[in-house]
Image (cartoon, rainbow, N blue to C red; front, top):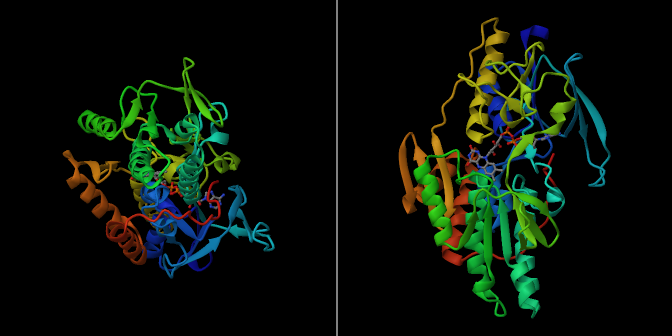
Length: 428
Ligand SMILES: Cc1cc2nc3c(=O)[nH]c(=O)nc-3n(C[C@H](O)[C@H](O)[C@H](O)COP(=O)(O)OP(=O)(O)OC[C@H]3O[C@@H](n4cnc5c(N)ncnc54)[C@H](O)[C@@H]3O)c2cc1C
């Protein structure tokens, strides 16, 4: 630590990494802070389902990391190896896929914040990874959007009613927040889209939500979950509770018990697992496979090593760990930065404690639910609140403007149904 200026490296520029880097720049203005991320943008995940149905342009759900802060040095690259014993991170820069040379950089650190997020958890269901769409990255959302449009174009060209039904059946797996939002968005989209195809019949459209639990949105209260269930069914979604899949094939899914649903489109939103790269870090892991941290967000036995967000298991007072949400990740990022600043000044760190402000979810066309500190809203008022809250939370003024413009354009000019350009993968 020459001249008392710590070298801090933050791995991952998602909600946790962005807030950690931003806060470090504020609290430790003389530190050398490097933020490493695979892409030069972060994905604002609450907008992903809107990208998947063409409601907003895919690039508008991305936040540029290079313009995060002048005090943060951004390095685009793939984290390949973390060695806590040598206090060094190895990052691959360049890309042979893009016709550019590749090189490995070694980044030494005094403090390392691991904020590498999570990946889709397919729970070992046969062929699920191969035949389903995820809903975690911009590429997932763009692929689903293009696939839906492709399915409609193909169905319109065929005269076989059986094929129409298979191509126009859309199955989502997982009844948590992202599963409900994805189902609601896809349902609203495809039921309007079918009206644009002269050879297709609205009755051929089928949208199914499969959930293993006894009710939707187990993270929310029963009243809002019941409203969501009712709202989805009212808009034509078949909600299958206490139902698990045994297989996802290229043209059908099989439910446990043997029943099959003929479909070409399965979206998998049934859980996440910590980024597998944390397996390569020689440090203790928690019950879900994330880096185990103490209440101060530091990895016990490894001074200078910290972990936050979906790749960490942060203990809650009273047992269990904090859920993998953007709300928690953002607060953990701020706390880890404050703790690195405290430790660098020879002071004691503070434990992480946070109660979420509430939950919001889209449940239909211009319909949402909200539970904010016990105040429960549903329908149009909750939808307006959803839009206002998430617009305000986009951490970039220019992106906020672009998203607001997309929303306005959809109202004034209708939805654009051109295929999206393909983009670089952001999946770990
Ligand atoms: C569709 C959807 C909707 C959601 N909606 C909400 C919501 O409304 N509210 C809420 O609270 N939460 C929501 N979440 C959950 C939330 O997105 C996550 O909990 C949050 O993103 C976790 O933040 P993170 O920083 O830990 O990880 P991430 O945001 O995933 O960031 C990890 C970063 O690490 C980078 N990375 C990964 N591996 C490497 C590597 N090897 N090298 C370099 N970089 C790498 C990734 O590119 C990424 O930028 C939603 C999630 C999804 C999928």
